[in-house]
Image (cartoon, rainbow, N blue to C red; front, side, top):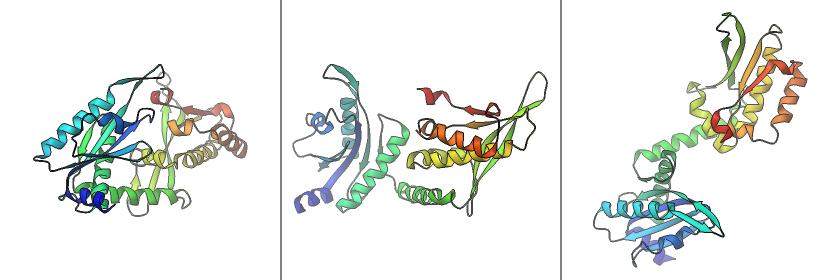
Length: 266
C-alpha cells in the first residue's frame, strides 16, 4: 500500500526481529509496548517488523529494542509448557539508512544478521560497512557452493603422538580450502558458512573418503582421525557415506576415528 510505503519512508526507526517458537506470536506480545502511532507487521514465518515514526532521538529506538527483547524473552506458559523465547533485533534509521521501503528493510535485515551473530537477546543498529560485509559473505557463499566440484579442498594431516612412547600413532585430517583468488582459507572461516547453507554434508563426505583413501597407504598401525561437524553428525546419510568410503578404499574400520565436539551432544 502507498500509505505503508510512505510510513516506511518517513520512519524514524524500523525494527526487524526474529523470535521462536511461533506458538507465541511476537507481534501480539509487542502490542502492549509500542505507541499508538507505531506499526507492527508480520513479515512471514518468525519474522516481524515494527515501524516507529517521529522519533526525537535514536535513543528512543534503543529503548524500544530493549523492551522488545525483554518482553519477548520472558517465560511463557503455553498449553502447560514452560517456554523461553529468544529474539534478536536489527535497527535501521530513516532516511539515513534508506529513504525507500525496500532499502530501509534491507538495512534493518543486515543489522538483524549482525545481532543474531552476536547472540540471542541482542540488538544492533545498521552500519554502512555491513553492506560491504554482506556482499563479501555472499561472494564467499557463491564460491563455496562450487568449491567441491572444482576440487578446491585439500586435507592437511597433523600427527597424533603417544606421549609415553613418543611414537606417532595416527594423523588428524584437517580440511583447507584453497581459493583461486583468496589463497588458503582455514576451516573456521568457511565451515560455519558451509553448515548454514547446507554444503557441509557433501564436503564432509568428501573428507571422509579422501582421508580413508590416504590412510589406506599408511602402515597398518596408523589411524586417521576425522572431525564431524554437528550438522554432519545429524545427517541421515552419515553412516552410509562412512560405509561407502571404507568399502571403496579397503581401509580397516578400526583405523578410522571420528571426532565430535561437546556442542554436538548438547
